[in-house]
Length: 110
Length: 131
Image 1 (tube, rainbow over the protein chains, first blue to last red):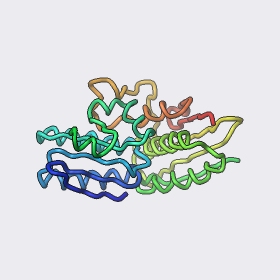
Image 2 (cartoon, one colour):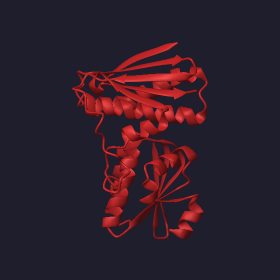
Image 3 (tube, rainbow over the protein chains, first blue to last red):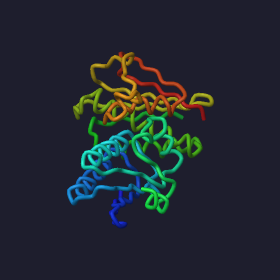
């Protein structure tokens, strides 16, 4: 998986490319801990180029949400394809993490 | 056509192992949404077998048996662990479990497949999907 981190004003955008499975969830967690350490409070994860997410990836997102909430921040996700959005919905993770249709809408509304 | 593959209980091998199985399943011309669900179920069942079944013991293996029977795909994942009580699995979408970091794998499988059964005291999960 490729992970690119960009800043858009106060929002840290984490752009993922590839699959969020067992090994890649560890990579995402490490990247996230780095941006958290650097003081990020509002983090948006862009899933446009993500084709697969498993339970390990979902767990990493929940942990990110919890750590940001503890730090007074928040986590959002955008550009999620229908298969992955379905996983967010059946596991009710969409009730914990706000999902936006695309990045520009996300950055305006976040 | 029948696929029978085995892997040692090493988590770092799971992603490549699943990818190799999907290449073989692809011969049955599975649509994109079904392929996603099969991939998800294989991933989760093998993770459970490696981590919870075989307790990450690299000397124990996980066997995957895949067959097309009529209009459905039948996938069996077997571990060599002590088995588990598959009748008392916590529901991961209750308010008290919603933020837990573990416990979603089997729930995802049950939603992705058409039928799921356990045999051999929980050491084998049998997952069926209509194609």
